[in-house]
Length: 316
Image (cartoon, rainbow, N blue to C red; front, side):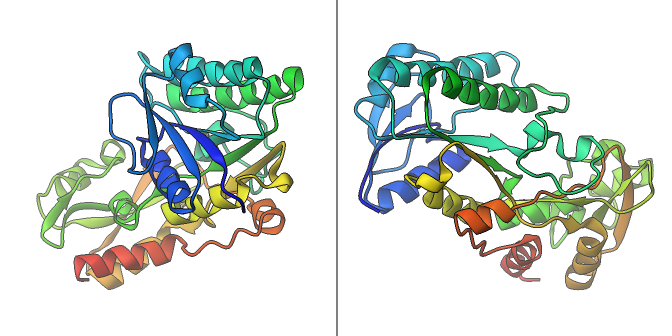
């Protein structure tokens, strides 16, 4: 693909920095809006905030393609300014300057409810927008709504990449471990759902363990999804400037993993017990057929390969 002029918002974030770095490496001319944190080397930098319309316009410049990854995580004081007003400013700036070749939005599986709601089958791109409680899920629904409605009104050719729980291998391992394992204490996000005895072990008293999330309404192990950064970056590269991606939404996740199977793997590889923890959550999966068949996405990872990579890094 010929080099493009690309404006990127959110280039200092975890996903945005990986995407910006890849676009620079691919030879594109990348302009990034920098607010408070550094952006990858090789980007032309515009100082300012996505909540400032003038800064957005300056970042947009004469770009061909616009990438919107600016977001905020469950922060009541900033999510309107960043996710809603920021996306609105980007869209309005595109309209006022006469359009763009493509707008790519960083969507999220949070916009369709994932494991907070019970689903009767894999979530496709046609799943209704249905945020679970929290400012971040709500912001992702509002972003998608703004983008699609601006297209109806003004004809902005968009692509939405609805990404799953994007993590590095060690982060995936951290999701499942609790307490003392391999010489370190792993803080687990589900400590509050554990029994008092498991909470003590999660705090480092006694033997650590692998968490197996159980749907408390059915008693069955939960299946849930992750996706690696490099497979997300691959999806962005495939969507960029691709006519087949115009006015399309694509799910971008790895196949769901059974948390009981993960528990067995970690027990075998790390010598820790797997402990069942009831959660107010349900199994889900997301259908990536569209991303694979239309854009040719070929993920290099899955949850188990990322876990094996992290275990190898630990020396397990």
